[in-house]
Image (cartoon, rainbow, N blue to C red; front, side):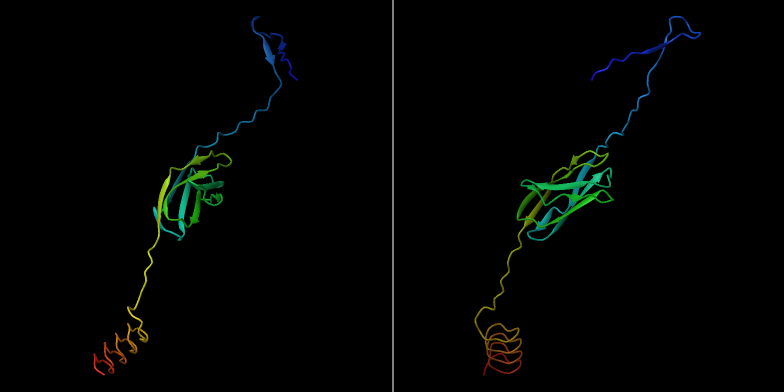
Length: 176
């Protein structure tokens, strides 16, 4: 319902005849502080090994003391929202697939603080090469041997401890 406002006029008490006084009912007005503008920044490594966890930290300023940050890449969200701690930080720990990632952090806002999105943080994840160790032939060497029928520490041949290429005893290098 729309009402009409009618001012209440009171007689002029000792003032000039052209001055009128009016009074209205008191009104309650709630004034809230404006929400603070925020900035969000990501820090962390720019390189990673595929399959190995990397920690990325989003810092929200000024410190809201609460709220969440959602980390994202070109494919969408990286996990779920991460809580902002008492220092204004949110930390994502995650392993990445091989390739270059462009990651942003989006602060969702909280009471008295506006949302903000970080600049992109570049991260390149690379695979680690596989190393194959081979003893060079199919000999029957013992522990530490490379080929042959030798004992511990031999290189080829059928010798005993310390032989090189022969069938001799300790320290021999040939012969039978």
